[in-house]
Amino acid sequence: MTESMVRAEGVHKRFGRLEVLKGISLDVRAGEVMCLLGPSGSGKSTFLRCINHLEKIDAGRLYVDGELVGYRQAGDTLHELRDGDVCRKRAEIGMVFQRFNLFPHMTVLENVTEAPVGVKGVRRADAIARAEELLARVGLQDKLRNYPAQLSGGQQQRVAIARALAMDPKLMLFDEPTSALDPELVGDVLDAMRQLAADGMTMVVVTHEIGFAREAGDTLVFMDGGVVVESGNPRDVLANPRHERTRSFLSKVL
Amino acid sequence: MSGSADTQQARAPAGRPDDVKAVPVRHPGRWVSGAIVVLVGAIVVNSVATNPRFGWGTVGHYLFSSRILDGLRVTLELTVIAMAIGIVLGVALAVMRLSPNPLVKGASSFYIWFFRGTPVLVQLLFWSFIAALYPRLSFGIPFGGPELWHGSANAVITPFVAAILGLGLNEGAYMAEIVRAGIVSVDEGQTEAAQALGMTRLRTMRRIVLPQAMRVIIPPTGNETISMLKTSSLVSVIAYPELLYSAQLIYDVNYRQIPLLVVVSIWYLVLTTILSIGQYYVERRFGRGTARELPPTPLQRLRRNLAIRHAAVEPPAASEERR
Image (cartoon, rainbow over all chains, first blue to last red; front, side, top):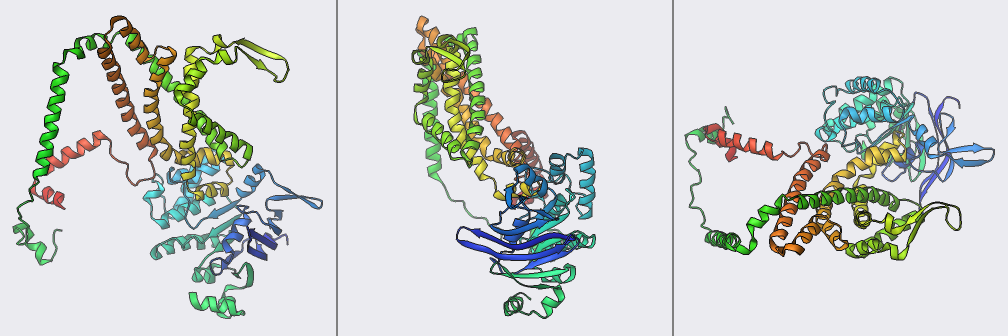
């Protein structure tokens, strides 16, 4: 339990009448790479967005590093966290989006240094040194002064990974990081993620990349209709799916 | 192109056999319309140059007279101050209008409804006659509390203050809509990415959303500034000597209305031209990061055109241009 980086207990989420999450319970250990797999509309991305409180949950409990997400418990009552506290917690969780969401009016270097300087109060010179190091790690050391629009999708996504890492997060969330990329650009982004996994980062990855899930993932969770259908070692789940629903999904994507 | 084994390309330098040499279509209509434009232009220039009632000598005499230049300065002051008030007010009203609090949102909507719904000329007159409505202005705790300061409305709301209030408060309503459109135009993913990095709402607005909204906000704001420059002439109705009223004061005495109105028009044209050029460069500055390459400045364009014209003399560059 103390090992848990993310712990979900019966998490429910509704958008109006539509119940997107119908009781998700799972554990992500520190250092674990968990891949969430499932058809679109199964609630994977919504669950991911609940972890850093971009969405509020309606029922259940969600903990990151042993602390409730978005709330404070005093006795039996929950108190919503103030904006500032929510921001502080989000700063410890990195997130990478399907559409990159780089800041188009800033250079690559400014994209990566903006939050460390502005949110964490890191000295600018230190932030720049760290950003240069991170960008070199994802192979973009010669793009520091470029604007995002001048980069390919794969390069933009690697900048987005560096931007998230610049906050020294204890947990990284990936929301379909390769779905908006041309097939030939997917490899570089997956390589950056593999390296991150090998360095021991705790990662929750929503993806359709079965290969990545099999090689880099410690756990594979298959979701459908807002519930976890099955989970386990990626090789086992992919080779011998126990549920009919998993089997039919895998037969379509493999 | 060089070194290609393609037969057609290999033959190209010797004059391609299928080169198109056709008789171009004649466009007699273009000649006719061009001739009409030249004719009308000549008539206008002739009448302007030969009609003595334009009083070009008088125009020259007053163009740089100190009274006109004083009026010009006042017009610029009014424009700058009123736009500054309008922009600050506009940003505040736009953020209020996007607030989740219905009362705050309602207040902003009401303000915009009221100030957009009445003519600015009427508003200017209202402010200048405000002393008739509230002869005594005071500042303190309302509803019978102690008074910290008070003064007569006539002393506080001078014609200058009335002009600034009338123009600025009215402009705020228009700027609010422009700023709101800009904020709404920024992709929601930007806010999410900023929040995911731990930025507060205020910081996200200031560092991420507003700078991007600027690209949408700047062009209409430039138009508003140019429009404000001209709208400030309405202040003449409350007898404050900006550019137009300064000219009116002069022609009330010497009855040379037309030459003085020409002087005024020339100055407005000069100022709007300068503002338009400034607007181009400001737009370019805020276009950073949206296009792969910034549009060239007129100077750069001139240089490039000269370079092309220069290169066109040499055959390889000429074929380059044909593509």
